[in-house]
Structures are given as C-alpha cells and as structure tokens.
Image (tube, rainbow, N blue to C red; front, side, top):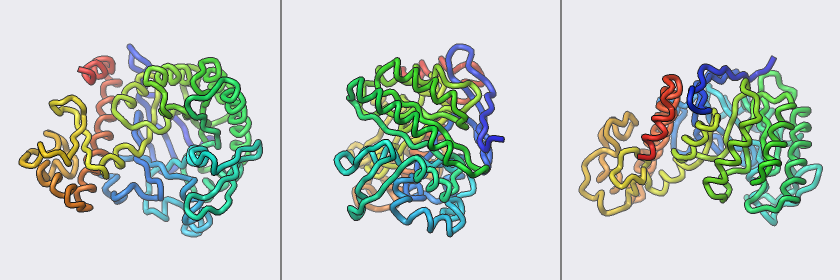
Length: 372
C-alpha cells in the first residue's frame, strides 16, 4: 500500500494537461498545484494560517538546510516537521542534492555520496542516498525525494551519461533506505540536455516502485525551447497513474508550459524572493510584463490596488500601490509581507484557473489567451 497515490480526474482532449488529486497522509489536494517553498521550515514572512487562506495544500521544505540547522534529530524530537512548524497539511522535502551540487568546489562526489563543506561554518559534512532518506524520515515529510546528482548546464555527453547512471543507482539505494509506511518517495529524472539520456532515465526510473516522479536538472540556465523539449521527453515515458513534479520553476509561463506537458506539481522560491525585492506578479498590467516593480516612481501617486478583482489579503483590504511603494522604499517589513501574500495568492489562483480550463477541455484557449 503506497502512502502517496495519484488519481487522474481528467485529461484535456487537446493537450497533455492533466487534472487530478494527490492523496497524502496529511490530506488530499487538487492538481496541477504550486507548492510554496518553506526552506527553513517556514515560508518566509507567512504564517501557516495565512498559507491555508491562500489555498496551499502542500509546501516544500529543504533537507539540506534543515540537515545543517537545526538538525533532523531536533525536529524528530519535536514530533516531526509538521508539529515543529505547526503545519497540518502535506509537506514535500527535497533530497538536498541540488544545494549540495550547487556548492561547486566545496563538494566532492563519489559513488558513495557527496562530501561537502557547510556554507554556515565550513565544517565537513556527508550526504548519500541513505543519509538523505534517513534525514527525511526523521523530518517526517509526506513525500521524500530520492538523492540525485543535479547536472549543470552546459555539460558534455560523457559526463551527463555517467552522472545520470549514478542517479539511477542512487535512486535504487534511496528506495531501499525508506522504511516508513506513512511516507512516499519520488524518483528524479535526469539526463541533462540529451534526448536519449532523458528517455533512458524516464524508462529506468519508471521501472522502480516510486510513488511519483520528478523532472530535475531543468531551468538551470538552458534556453526555454530546449527546456520544454527535454521536459516533453521526460514526461512522455512516465506512468500515467503517478504524479509528475517539475522541480524549481515558478513563473507563470513555465507553469503553463509544464502543465501542457503533463506536469502536476511545481515549486519555486520565485514568488517570495521577488516579493522581497519589491516585485508584484500581476496578469493585467498594461506593459504585459506581468510584473510591477513597486520601487518605480510611476506608482508614487497610484491609489489603485495591485490588481483589480484580486482576492489576496493586500488587494481585498485595498492596500494601494502608492502605499506599498512607500513601505518598500522605507524598508518596512509589512510591505514585503503584502507583496509575498499577493504573489503566492496570484500563483495559487493561476493554478486553479488552469485546472478549471483542463476540466472543461479549454486549456488550449487558456494557454493562447495567456500569450495575447
């Protein structure tokens, strides 16, 4: 009996877009869905109740950061990550692989795992498939991710092939290390920017008994068209009855194109990070950029809300662009919170609209209208 199951509700007649339900030990949620990122066991500046009000059914936390601080043992002692952070809905934890591999010269890869220096104090640490899964079991997430090697862009074919094959061996070890019956494990498709390696990776992982599958190693600097091509190959060979998760993307165009290619789940720090830099995500801005840079002087006397008909906390309570610009320029935390709440609501609402369009076989029209 799998702890995590995916139920396909409807597939758009004219595309690969899917609407479904992911069943987890901490509740069911509708897909496609965007997962807010709570790197350090918190979505920056947002309370659990506010996340629920936004409609978030599942959030992501970061194994690498929690492994280093405060440590998985302390979180286990507190009763697991759900109790530690007072979040009673689903949690997905990444494996820590992406963060470790982004350390560059501060890490050394072997077949056994990765030795690296902590970015906090420089101390020597070690992560392997077994350590990563054991850490995620102590955290008690609903979905744990297999430990993989994230391939940089660009990378030559020989390196990419060897790395992808190592990811497959690590995937098997990750599955073997999982012992909790109330936790699911997702495998991660790699293969770099090579079509044959992507296909091979999808087929190899599909033969393993994972609860779902992620597509990794994309949105790492490659051109958009190449990313979409590799994503399409990656999802083409994954089973229909398992959830599909595209890691690390959070702009509306990437979400839209991911859903078009059969992806169910997404995560990214983008909406919260840009909020802290004073940027609001909108759909009907006259410049068609979909973004408002609130530091700009054009908003000094703008007494409209961020976006008309938006039901986020900021817009519903009529906090104006002029006021939010003032808060941002004055480095007031409330301004960053208002933008964060708005951006997270924007993406949750965007995903809801996509789901409705899929259920009504109107996804292609939704997609075309987005680019008008």
